[in-house]
Image (cartoon, rainbow, N blue to C red):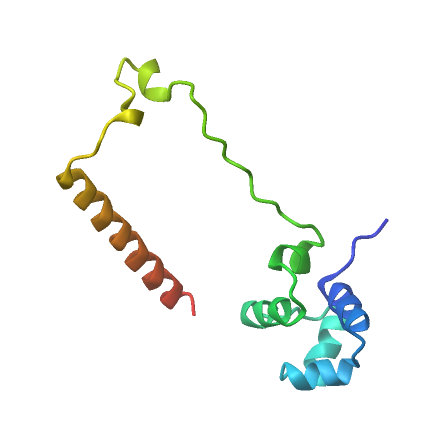
Amino acid sequence: MQSQSIYERIELLIKNKGITKKSFCEQLKISTGNFGDWKRGKSTPGTHKLIEIAAYFDVSLDWLLTGKERYAQTVNEQSSPYFFELMGQLNCQDEVLSEREKDFIKEYIEFSVYRKSRQQGSNR
């Protein structure tokens, strides 16, 4: 069985939404030439257009690109010892953080958010 192409998945979404290909192209500002190239396999939508298409049809990028959904793994808290005990360290799970430790964590979170925003800015 041959897997679906991105174009075929887009075509299916258009059909399921009950709109015409022309209407779809107009709404997302896609030229009919580009759309035709996608159909013939000469090109595929760029990253920004894929994001727009996924948002327009309310589907995941994973599904749009691969035809498969990717599900987040669930992390379950356990009462078993963390890896600290295996290395002879204390399990600090029940310890209260000092103000200095809390400030450090807050600063690190702010730095992480800043770094992520900078990375997203450079990817545009």
